[in-house]
Length: 368
Image (cartoon, rainbow, N blue to C red; front, side, top):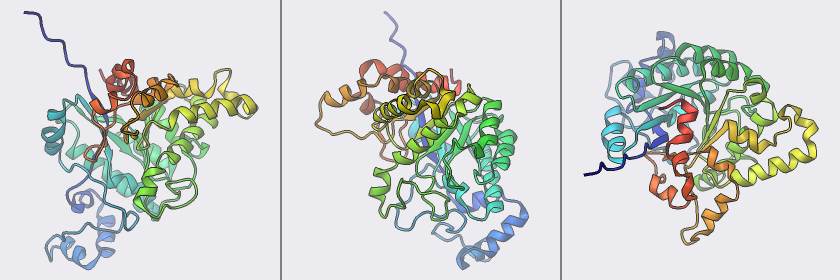
């Protein structure tokens, strides 16, 4: 009897993880900052942290707070929950952990606290999530407000087992991530061979230095999520326009949380303006921006927005820009309402499947 064909790998580049209790993160802070957190906590949490009361049922709002009125971001809170509840049943062979609440740590306005929280976040991730299951990979969280400190943190934990990239969440200084200010981060990531991962929604905290959309703070979750790709497009244009990939030719960037639909028209506009104003970006050389983007940028499929009754029109739309096939990586957004692999592949051109399911992610992260 002939052997059944092997199931192709399925790599998920977007799984949100978080802590079940805020006390998990606080336990990794130095004593001085733990005392600071106790003193600045609401009364119920203050009493709990000093051992004088039960843990409150509500999160510790304070050091990492999001816009009031926005629904909380769902996240898995244990390795067992992730592996038994998702990776096994879904047949996921690699999973990239992208923080939920922790995504916002770089926007904490008390900068030295933000640096300490970042270190605590990475130590907590290494302790709770990395090493036990080789399918699970994590990202080095950094405080982008202080690029030199961020570079130090990348070098401190970027080589640890299970660390696969560098997370750029909240934009603490209101500059796109390709700006020369962030060069220490670019350099450290390039030295360790780690891609940068930019996640839309990192700027949702009220105290973050930048808006999550192009013209100000959206007032509802519907607006914010509809416009999520705007921040990704800005950061991506900055990486190309500021010559980051000319300085670090092996560096790559993964963009998550804005879907795929914006990428083709964005590439067309970049190429059009390059032809008209190429003297502004001489470091791109003779290759158009779309070619540089295909070499250096990857984009997650989550959220996968398309009209339900469009038939083949959506597939034809994606096929108009072949460069997107080299950029797309399957991203579920688990445990949110993200697309399954089957749902995404049912709309994308059929020959994209090997790249989207695993090939592009393997090239990006060195996963075999």
